[in-house]
Length: 399
Image (tube, rainbow, N blue to C red; front, side, top):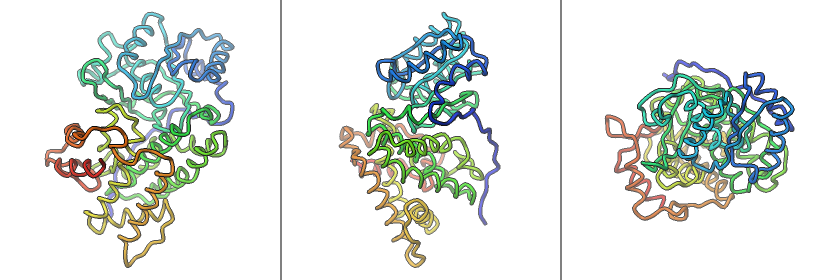
């Protein structure tokens, strides 16, 4: 008998999708109660056209603002420290992020910290739980992490541990997210590819679940097919509006809960790649690059080590996402062909194929395995669970 999960969800933030909608940012901030804005992002020297549109919109709406530039990949604790103090000093009541997941994750931390009398890092170090926050709005520039719609925030501790620390809370979700495909035109091709792989990875993980949901399968496979089709086009043609629009539409819906209805993610055994992605935390590499190496390899392990049900699920992935015909007499052949096509799709972007190419040292497998959270049974709870020794062996196969 198939298993199902009880399900609860909220579909927010307010999504504003389309060409030129960035100019509405000032009105949206006022709609959600903002009167003085902290603008957080990469900086006007990095994305000048976007900053110009946002500044004009805020000015036209009579909204004073203060800017915090300098956001980088794997957002830093030190930048949030600076921004929290500035928000308090300036009596900010709205936080606006310009950029991708790093800007958004920073904004979430700032919004909590600005309403907290202690050190905001207490939340990420599990010493306290956030109870209040400023409203956050996002002008997204990349189809990637989907943080503009998620309840997660991850910050790199560049003060003490040098590790990423995450926090999940329903209060983290922004009040609006502007998804203007034009804002992603200037992304370097490699960043477009890494972001798109990140989009796919969120739905990829929830697809491999012991909990069944036909509707979720249809949504998930359709979303992944859309990314597979349009990401190479966006990489080759940066100003192809249709490709950018399709990817930006997929981005929030890959992680906002739609593709997990009936099998609530995370749930027991409902994962394939993210629990193994400790690379970006330990070695400060980009999340999507590590996932590009991990995802096809973990599917191969599922096929080589899994039972008939696990193999069937990988075959289903190959059929739904890459169009591999189902061979009912040899599901392993179907699954392996799907993995081969998945590998080929990823390699077409010119990303590193191994951890060694990514720049990891020889001792990386053992170091990465120490960062994993194992259950009481000593295993990592994936679709096909792994012991620590199996995790080390898996990482070694990626070197």
